[in-house]
Image 1 (tube, chains in turn orange, purple, red, blue):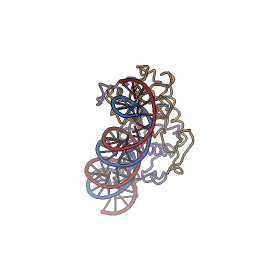
Image 2 (cartoon, protein in one colour; image 1 turned 60 degrees about the vertical axis):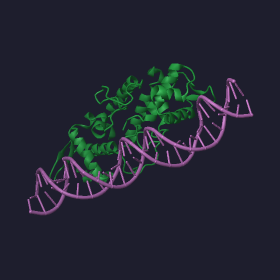
Image 3 (cartoon, chains in turn red, green, yellow, purple; image 1 turned 180 degrees about the vertical axis):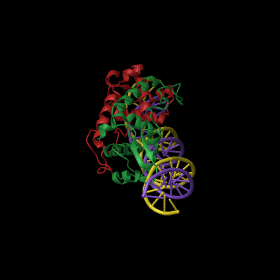
Image 4 (cartoon, chains in turn green, orange, red, yellow; image 1 turned 45 degrees about the horizontal axis):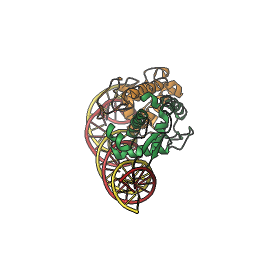
Length: 133
Length: 133
DNA sequence: CAAAGTAGGACTAAATTAGTCGTACTTGGG
DNA sequence: CCCAAGTACGACTAATTTAGTCCTACTTTG
């Protein structure tokens, strides 16, 4: 259940790589260095870009680079960029509001689950890319 | 990724039910009351029993009952009883030691992930069945 | 001894996630 | 001005995990 998806694992490794190198690095380079399937990593990088965590440079000397300092990128943001399921239960929407769920009526654990969600997010929010170095 | 499995959701609802009733309740009764597939709930109850959280009474007036006070059953124990994946990554074994993983050599985020795992467990460990009432 | 319960293994179906393929677009340098 | 090296992205397939079902056995109380 609370296992990180490969997307998140790969994303964290890539961000760590970018943070260490401190400059532009290509998907192919990271993929080779960390032994990550290229095509999959490419998508992960795209997602990280569209979340605004990294920036891309096209063309022959292109690649990706961090858009912020490692200290200011926390894991909960990375997870949000890379996972579809960011919430502990179906009924919690990303913003913290309740969404729809088949069991909405009979379910009696919505509030406590919401509380737990916030605590988990807090745990992830406190950890940054800087702690991966 | 960090979504609770149905097994855990159902288990929590059942434990809440047992805590509220304060006495023996049958799987069929809980299943009907919470609208949970009976067969599945039955297995969940069995798992909760083998973890030592609840006790079972066979025969015509049988059912399940809590073995401890709601305050002393925390969520991390419930999750451990009901999920196969209790760890954030493949390389972390339940005890906190490192296990095997395909990427063991190239992976450079093992230690920080271990740290995160402990923090998540702490979050879940702090919440008890009593908070579901 | 029968009804109401738990116990548990084997199986199927559904959903999610991982990974692949193919094609288009962009940019800097010769 | 065109080619190589890069990103962008959608559609597809495969693998894994999770949910749910079925069937049969065992236990206990009235």
